[in-house]
Image 1 (cartoon, rainbow, N blue to C red):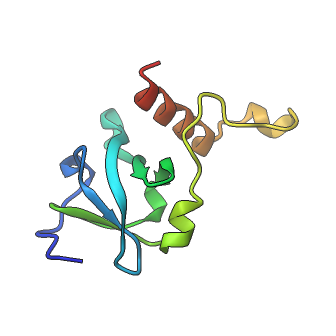
Image 2 (image 1 turned 60 degrees about the horizontal axis):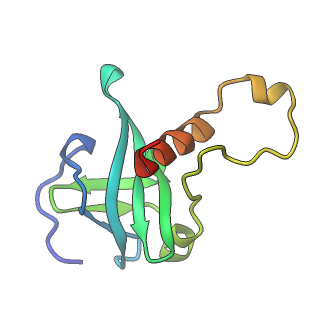
Length: 117
């Protein structure tokens, strides 16, 4: 991993920013940032990975720098991250489905960003 520059924030992330796993290997780059700007809340970003788009939750981000992002997870875990989808799968509808599901909502928002829908 080369010099990533000064520490930054989600506000400095842009399309093409390289993303590194906890072991230092580059795993892809940022394509879309998900944030609630009104509440200044970083939710995560969409990662362009060699296997396709993946959603990286904010809790999986260790550090953001001006020239890169370092994740808390290793390369194998990064490859297994969920893909953004229009309607994240649910096998059964139950009481939990009536409660706001932040991850499901973020995956849906990520899908809308990359699909234009």
